[in-house]
Length: 359
Ligand SMILES: Cc1cc2nc3c(=O)[nH]c(=O)nc-3n(C[C@H](O)[C@H](O)[C@H](O)COP(=O)(O)O)c2cc1C
Image (cartoon, rainbow, N blue to C red; front, top):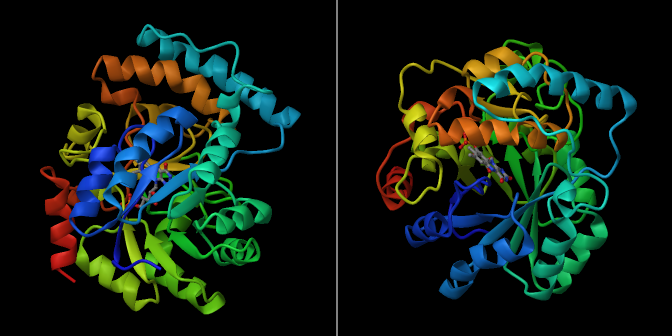
């Protein structure tokens, strides 16, 4: 399905620009555009330059939660709102009283609008994270000529994805930077209890298993093409993932510092700053487990943040925006995979060359 063993992973929130996707594609990787957080109009503009190349590419979407928060989580969000006020005040930011909900398209990350766009104006590949696209949607995408990729973090998730009819799987290890794709609760999947803490049992479980080990487990369970992702720092890691049975490996963090990446300078600089010693899985920023450099915000709020995405994402957004405006990394979500120290600056094509040249 993928003619190259190297995939430029989708990185929503500004990191994957059209320029980054084009640069990685031009250097021989398969590029994914990042649909998360974008409106349908913004997504259309983001993918237009990729369409124009005539080369296959993918678009990634977040699958929204369908169930409302239960009362316990609503109360936990309220507690977290109060907890965040002191931190927000330090940045002159307000924690919002009202969060997008109900019919507000932001609450579902503009899902219906973006799905309509991709069905009306089809693209070669669509990948999903945070959950499975319904089988009926997978079927509709197939009928317009789009191949469908699901993101999974465990064998049970891989088996569920096969049932939905997808064509390939991203097998994401908990060492990956940014949000975990996990959608079923399982030990070490990044979705279990304790992952809100930098030192909790989820973090410990995450480093006990390797990406090649996870890929081999999924390979033994399903026959679909696999893309291994999470913590890949150099070509030797790619080789190990391919040897374990994947058709390709995806890199995210390795591209964050590149010239074409839209990550903020403060994020790029933090990845090269020896003051940061660790990454951790944390819910502190968005209410969904995500791997980030451990900074003050992770230390102060990692243990108390509730599992409530996207509510916590909306709660912390003004605080993060204020920290970004002040170029202050202490309250920013500095997404980073476990291989962050190897991330290089310079042209993205040089990073891709370094990976492909070493295979
Ligand atoms: C800044 C950042 C943003 C990300 N955004 C997305 C996203 O929008 N959709 C997605 O499926 N994965 C996202 N991920 C995860 C990547 O697609 C990929 O699984 C991960 O980067 C691989 O691990 P690595 O960062 O250690 O290379 C993101 C990762 C990072 C670092």
